[in-house]
Length: 284
Image (cartoon, rainbow, N blue to C red; front, side, top):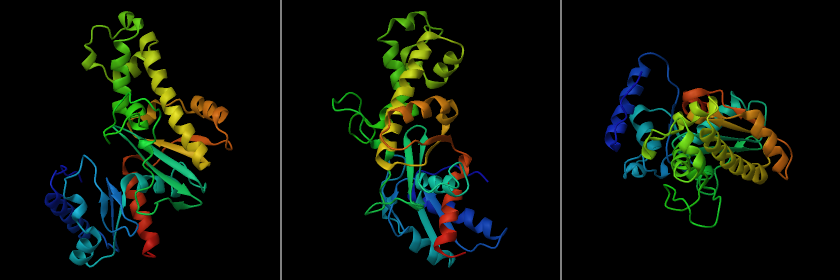
């Protein structure tokens, strides 16, 4: 079932209530598991750090208390990127490993970290903000978080597009590109990826610049956490040359070799991971 996402906390709650009520008529529900944007506390009860795509009062809702009271069912809420990482760890590309990182390459960059078989949450629950690793000192490119040079500002879909637009104004190869008739503001990742596959030189430079920025961030993660693997999900995951970047990263890192893998859990990974976490927490 598909619901239009409401940009209002009370409407979000009402929509979720409706979905749960409909599911209750179809199956015997033992618990409620919710994967959401925003940092979630260590008790899996509420959002403690909201994001730009959430209403301003979203973090004021005691989700666990509200849903447990309304439906008389144990309730767990978890950050969607953390939940996705747990899904990949339990049933997806990282199954069988004990140390894994999952990153989502979309409009932004999300991530979840598994250390010794446990989801890394930090002191408050907000650990794993992979997209905000800083890649440089000079303030060159501003991130949505307000800081400069974040991994997300370069390797996300938004960052990739920014790189394309900047290069089109800087390098002569654009004059001979199949994209030359497009205005700078119209250039996007889809155009460049298609051009790259056709052998366009400008598109090759733009793609490989993005690829290098991705490698820098992944190398930093590998050096810090020494994982068995890094799993890549999200819209841009289909455009990654896994064999190539795995080889380069393993040549750069000072830790032990790792695998770079494409995610397997798909668009439902957050929901799958939240459900598995609820099963384990409530002994279902």
